[in-house]
Amino acid sequence: MATLKNENGPRGKTCAPAASWNDFRSAVQFITILPAGREAGFSASGMIRFFPVVGLVIGILLILVDRCASLFWGPGTAALLDTVFLAAVTGAFHLDGLGDTADGLFSHRSRERALEIMKDSRTGMMGLVAVICILALKTAGIYSVKTTHPPHAVMLFLLIIPAYARTAMLFGFRSLPYGRPSGTGRDFFERPMKAMDFVWFAIPLLLSVFAGAWFVLFNAAFCATVFLVLLFYKKKMGCITGDMLGAMTEITEAVLFLFAGAGIFS
View 1 (cartoon, rainbow, N blue to C red):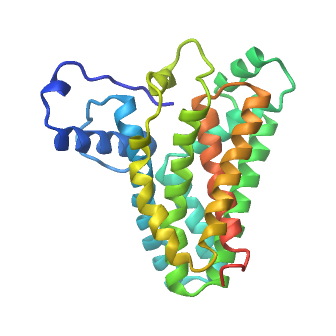
View 2 (cartoon, rainbow, N blue to C red):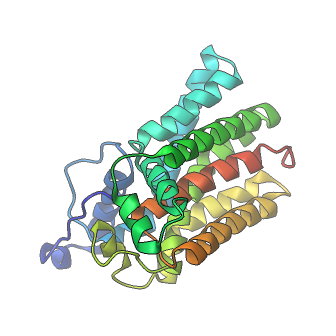
């Protein structure tokens, strides 16, 4: 996870709208490479509720990239460029977590050794395979979405799926303890998640209604994916780390694109 900076003193003198705006900008700066003004002081617990909103911002940009790419190339190339954009806009932040997580969890070592492997900046074979597979699955899913649905439905899924994927991290924060005695990710676990921390997820959730009669299945696929990933983490490690949260984001995004492109929504 990127380095966190805690704001002392001035935060208490800042009005609520200004504090929320700073938290939103901090969330943008933390999980994307998008410009968001000067570096904002923030509390980790304050910015995580804005992760779904950042996902919507990514979704809007993804729609623009897809529309531009589709002017010049067919759906296959456009889908590939969409996948490249999703990796680039985050600075491969979540993909790096995916690679480290795969190296650690599939090393068949003890919990402590697996955590050490995840901290290693080098990527092993399992990490490389995991990243390649997720990128391939995501590209295939986006291609299927583009060739299965009318344009308005394509835009809907391109908009909300990045938001759902980043919402998955909130469930990770809530469900499992942090796995390291210290680290940059520990600030996110300073207090238990509250219901209000999920308030911004209401936007993509309500937008999913426009998926049609199958929107319930779409949300069921999201819940099942998050549940299964967290269950695997619990059985394998009994905890979660920043790398594992990033991996969950990538897995959720790929699964939802595949599910949306399966044809049951058309």
